[in-house]
Length: 169
Image (tube, rainbow, N blue to C red; front, side):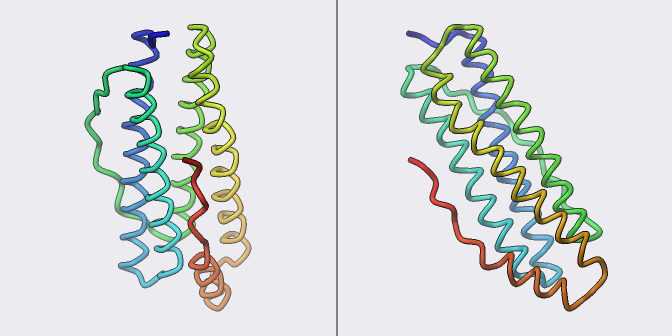
């Protein structure tokens, strides 16, 4: 079954969104590196890598379905932040936008009776729950530590212990 034009266009747009998220996380990592928050920088760097993997999953899926890959332009990411909390709040907004986009894709796939794409997207639906929870948890912790420098250093150290979560092939 060939992908509908609408679904193909939406999946290509998602590639751009995932690459933009990767680029944004890299910018967030750079902010943290420049401010000597090594653990937070590591966390964001891993997140950037993960988003690139997501983009490539969409890329490969389009090719596997015989569709045309059309890579959209990627907008420059935000680079100025006032605090670690602001960075993670921006991260949550980004994850919520990705979740909304995945949900739209899922709806389009259903409307097109494209159950192969519905099945493919299920992994992303589940992944977004994890993504939003991880960022929300960090925001909650940052809110708890407030301006306590010792607690911030501990939280930064703990963020640096995050492992690359085994991405499904």
